[in-house]
Length: 353
Image (cartoon, rainbow, N blue to C red; front, side, top):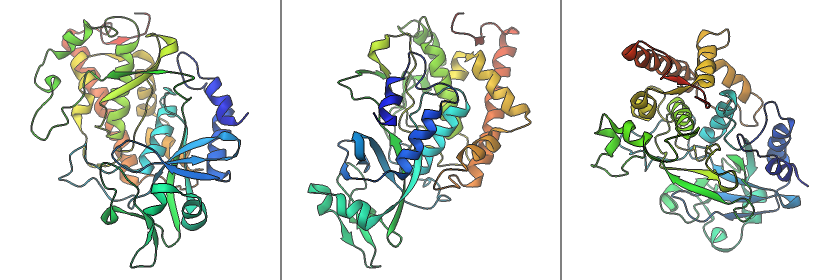
């Protein structure tokens, strides 16, 4: 069995992997170094992603590098038309692990040879989209909803291409997943606002709807809100859980490619679930306080965690600075919530509360 098979078999009701699980590092190493035997384009999605096949039936999802690390989200891009960043996928995995959630699949960076590891292994419709640019670089664009044309091609530099490799979840036939509409989903419309953006009492309504009326799920969404605010990811419209575990289980943290795009802007609307519900899990608060008070800040811990990645440094330095600033913003929001009622109990809760 491959390390991916073993990893998938160990997924539990409350987390994808145990703290300090050596299998995670083994899997990261496999994805970064194992020989690639075939590539194909993943169906669906707005931007190009490739399925990477290794020996022993192991697979990974490849997101290619599009632009330099210091390039920010274009000011006129809506959150739903922004480019995906391979570095955001890598950094989000490490951040999810540092925060103690362990709800994101392992992701590593890797540098590929465009000719021998992509062009030589592609076939079908994907192969037809390869071409040589005027700069004599090998490029491809694939087929997808957005940005899959010659003007938005992925090109080697000159014959190498950097990208993120994410471990696959278990096949849906083996481990079916339930897809949930996120209560704080954005409108995905150029002019229309979502209900939660206009209703100050929106959380009261959410608290009456299963599965948010009992159990851990509402606290899990608070964790997701904290996680997305730290990364700057506004693109959280649905989430998934494993059906076999019922409702008393964790939501998977998937699709982080649109994070880490605006290091100088803190998008407070991402934190709306926490600020509207005035709710946070006690263990999450303790983790944030640990990084706020030191001795090691979140930016330092994340930089250290990512330092051994094959494409390190993963993030532009201002993104790391933003993390520490955003931790302070979250903690101030919690202080404000506690000050409203002058009591701690309704705001900071455990699953058993």
